Length: 350
Ligand code: TYM
Image (cartoon, rainbow, N blue to C red; front, side, top):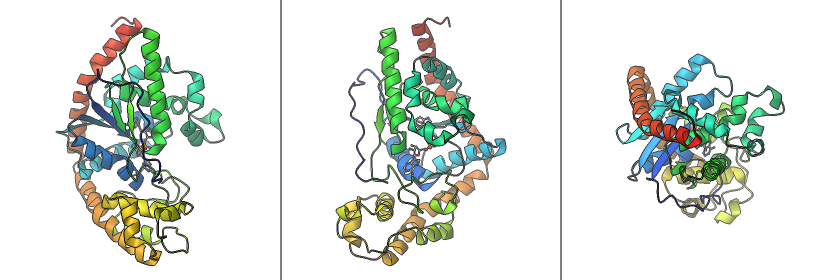
């Protein structure tokens, strides 16, 4: 997590003609982890209360760009919906849905695949990381993944997209695709979306290695806090989190070359809804033996109620399915006319 990189990229094209609208999404793979919560879901809830229309999806079609066991995918989709609800997303105030139920995402993605350039796609660092050394074996879907993400956003003319730092390059691509489409067809049809990458938790790092991002797919479960973890697991993972032998420094500058210490301070700040400077003011000079138990107490107080609420919601999968179906229908009423108009602009008979 990096306290310095908290600014959104400046917007060079104002979207005055577009109704402000927020969209974001999360992949239903494994369990939600603390980075997803602090970097994304918690921000989604804040934006739900900002008076702007908010749409939050579960990107099941993105999930299958790498192999997913079908039963696990279904469970993870419902569990992510339970996570959204437990964190405070309200299906009356936000549109909550799963991507595949709104076929307009895939329809627009095809058109945008024909706008995006190979050279742009080859620069996507997340593809290189996920495909690893053997790119020939990666699915074609994994390569065009960011175009589907652009479609998720542009199919609603969304103007703001709250995400963690790792999604920045994908959102820049979304802007490039929107600009190229508008230029190619001589229209001002798609907005140039504003990434919202703000706060102290835009990049929560692994608890085992402060230079690696906390991730749902890290092979070590001790590297992350899952939102399904109970109080004992949360406390144990924080107790065992890697640190260095020095006490906490006197100032924020003292955290610069101490990634693990900086990560724990940022996690504390994000959970306590304060700044890293305030946390430093409280704990400067204190040893980790004193800081960690306080962080563990805070994390348990904030996260354990979420995991028990998720477990409760998971007992009624029919209700979760009902919420997602209804959300998908509402989402389609926005997406359908936008795809129709896109086809007309391109010259496709509809
Ligand atoms: P995904 O599923 O990997 O992650 C979901 C959200 O969580 C954020 N995040 C983090 N934030 C802080 N620290 C971390 N360690 C951390 N790990 C994950 C991610 O930045 C993201 O905001 N491509 C997207 C999903 C997507 C999407 C979209 C997002 C598909 N379509 C349209 C926005 C708009 C992804 O894989 O996120």
